[in-house]
Amino acid sequence: MLNGVPYKAFRQSLSIEDRRALGTFFSSQELARELAGALHATMPEDGIALDPTCGIGDLLIAFAEYLPLGRSLLETLRGWGKRLAGIDQRQDLITMAKARLVALARARGGFTAPISSLDGFFPNIVIGDMCRETKRIAKADGLLFNPPFGGISEHDISEWGTGKLSAAAILLDTLLEARSPKASIAAVLPEVLRCGSRYARFRSKISARSVSGGFRSHGRFDSWTDVDVFTTLLTPGVGALWAGASAPSDVVGNRFTVRIGPVVPHRHEKKGEWQSFICAKTVPAWAVAFKPHVSRRFKGTLFRPPFVVVRRTSSPSDRKRAVGAIVVGKNKVAVENHLVVLMPKDGRYKSCIGLLKVLQADATTDYLNRTIRCRHLTSGSVMSIPWTGSS
Image (cartoon, rainbow, N blue to C red):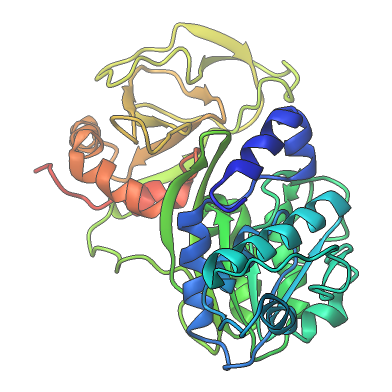
């Protein structure tokens, strides 16, 4: 009941597609204990900890490990029931969460007394939608948060994003608005929220809510969830939000103008003049003098060689994070949006050679692995690469 068997059984009973639709990917013991320990240190002695997307209760169980035992099983459960709160949309998950908390109380206290029903225990762990349970959230002294990682297209967000947005971002925004001003939030979140350029305005909004916090990158959430995540403790007060190491003084952006390729093949109609065209599939890795050999009609922004392109798709598991190539030739080039374009400010081919050496350096891969663990490089992350390993 306590060591991951319920999650295994749940995985076996639902397809990966159904679990993605429901957002039911549960915290590991390591992550749960990290979040619970961080939150417990900020809580008053008799404070209420709430998980607004509690699932089968992994985070609540980790927090309950810090709660005192009573003289009996009933006394323990009544005491824990005053300190633990949770919300989930599924009755079966709520029931499992309560049953697991009972199992933890038995294991910790060595209690053997039977109980005939879960009814009446943990009255604050309830069926509901966190977006509608704002009053319940406001009563909590601290919040544990492992939100769904999928995307949501239908929403009323306009201040910081449009189109399909991360469910984790939308729900964190809701949680920050509903929480007590004194409540901290211990959360596991997708890396894209911390370092994706699309969520820059989202990060600004969070900072404006007078919360701050560091981060710890964890890589892939688990073997069944292809999302890189980080943990954070958001505490009340003005300060840095998810800040990394101080930026080096000499970076790629000082020497190169950085743009994302503008051509979206499936979206842009083939109109305008014929242009030389490159995409991520046609440019060889680490080429020092690639001449485009494909053309297409395009009437948008073009780039004049020499310049460097870097593949945007980039995983922390890759041997090299910033795979580049130098594009040469006499004609301007249309570039696909899966490539980052770096144009030397001095216009020199020699500068492109220098950049390729920087991109190939192990120090660059190490830097990107520390700063951006989502699966696509952004123009900002490429601009911030330290200029090292090249004369």
